[in-house]
Image (tube, rainbow, N blue to C red):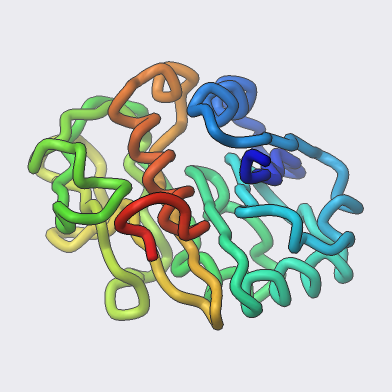
Length: 219
């Protein structure tokens, strides 16, 4: 049986028009049974049947109190959580979510080309990438620098685009352990075009397989 992904795409704030492309990309990766949902009640049910829970450009307050408890217990007990792009703009009213994800969104400059620098050449989410990855995105700034609380995989080279606000150390994608579970987050993925990019799809696949402990090099 294929590993199941619960892909949550509910928004109560800004809604990205790339969400359908993101869901399609996760389905196209192959090897996963993707269950895409918007109903917050779905997060109130036991999540143990899922290899990973993915928040795909969610925004605002999207969980019920019961859903918050269920998600927290799922990750604490060994589940996998993956956040993509606007997942960092989610659940500002739930302090544990900021700890779970690693950082919260603050602002972004205009959508533009830039460079991402690979810090970990061995991680499944980044080992396929060149040391300097040319990409076009919104280059999120975060309220706090998560370094020290997370394992940084990619940083933004702020000299390569206009409007960066974090300086020389600007984490962009990372992973961390939470309880017995694993968390992966990438700030990239604003535009529908990102999800057609083979390198970005491999970045997503590596993050999901690492968090869910699927495949070689993810144990």
